Length: 153
Image (cartoon, rainbow, N blue to C red; front, side, top):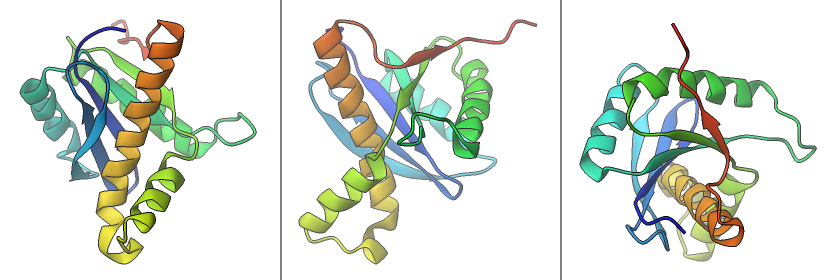
């Protein structure tokens, strides 16, 4: 298991949930919610400078059938725009199947209503993505997900 903070993103049309791991790579915690839109990439770049992660994990929505749909295409396009903005930090796409459902269920169990916690669910979903990636790396000895390569110009 590699030591170092991982920064996780749960990309949505309205909000981007952000979470991070501890430096030991044991536990993921929600950080914040960023409005999706023009300032999102610059805020993520600020968070990369602040937390100095060894990688950024971006949730890739894959259907239960294993197929990628329109949401996955949006994530791949966002990842391609993110890579040059945080050029020295690797970006990996991680299967996020059921991350939002898992986060919402956990928040309901903790007594947070969906109306009050909609933004918090996004950050909690990002934490689920990071935690899932940490567990996968612990079990396989390899970084989770698929590396996003910078486009050659």
